[in-house]
Length: 332
Ligand code: 13P
Ligand code: SF4
Image (cartoon, rainbow, N blue to C red; front, side, top):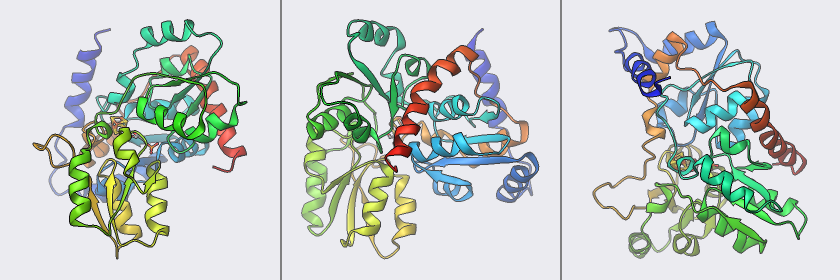
């Protein structure tokens, strides 16, 4: 099948204009009720999408919801690997991603053929892979993880266990530094988190000496070393709620600032600047492909849907379920 032709066709309807006079938010809410649909929104979505999501969270929380919801349709306002994970966990449901091209540079940095060879070269290693991977990579994985539970899952394994960690090198190196474990790390990275500039963050800190620096572990080591707190998206959010500082320099995707401001309206949040000064933002351009209009159209037409064959679902399900079981056992 010519996948690109299919994508173009899907793109044309999601970009269809919303008819004049239609209240998009009211219509989305009405269609959700009528079709027994839920919207799962990641913290990196725009604020309007976060506000209409039935469940808002990080990758771990959203996969836990996807495994448990009794809705008939899941609309995933996030990126493709997240929607794929929802489909794997709830194969009987219709899973919609409002733009099929909402991919992930980190997932793309781990091509299945190369990863298969890498894994075969180290048969005595347990494979832990971040959920930011394709379903095919998950079929070659023993346990999945997210940035919220990666350290706990590595520590859950016996101390002498040899580990392959994929695909994010920055998260892998961070976990290795903190846990001291024997890990072989795939050299992938996320284009948003790799872009933060140490010099510019240091400049901001000079201007705002009281501000605390907080960073996602997908950032490069020099950024993590200057941070007051390193953690997943939800860990950074929790920190800003519980900590007593008034100002934060935030080194992760800028969408999370909406929730941070909502939770702590009296505090001030500054987006950490990227190295490339032509772009003053820290947006994930894949996450930001999802728009209210595309959600409206995809609910209306019940497309584009995420499809996976049964064999892939069966094999990719095991490491995700294992991750959810361990997370439950550890109270995460
Ligand atoms: P979280 O695990 O914090 O949701 O991160 C998802 C992601 O895409 C990070 O870039
Ligand atoms: Fe992927 Fe990075 Fe975007 Fe997260 S922020 S979805 S890791 S490209």
